Image (tube, rainbow, N blue to C red; front, side):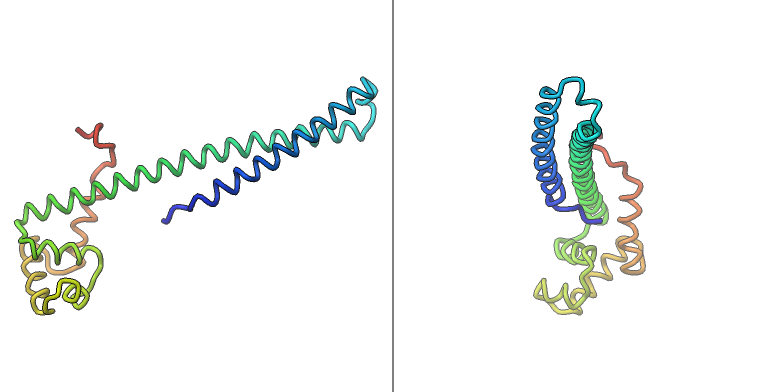
Length: 172
């Protein structure tokens, strides 16, 4: 899931400002009518309708402001969780690589494999032959105790799913 850009909160903010200005204008208009007519203003349907419309507009502004604040809090929370997940995944990957005693070349190939690159792409990125990449992959799979790419990636997915996402200061 990709997080929305900041366009949605900015759009809501512009809408809230515009509605607030309209509410202020209409509130001033209703107040002026109410002051000029006194208590008789409540006897006219025009005044009552305007008053109810102003109150509804103010309620809408309050609702939208709360919605915007909730949206921004949720976005911040999701960004924090995404950062924690990325950090946890990195830690899991490095711990596994250390445990398997992967060489620097094998680490490179393993990182590219986890990122979804194919053998030819990895060879091109590393400036090596496809046979070399295949040899590294065979060594990686042997050290990891798996038979192929799917099982290799599955190890990390399983580790990540079983790792609770907590801020680093809480986990320590």
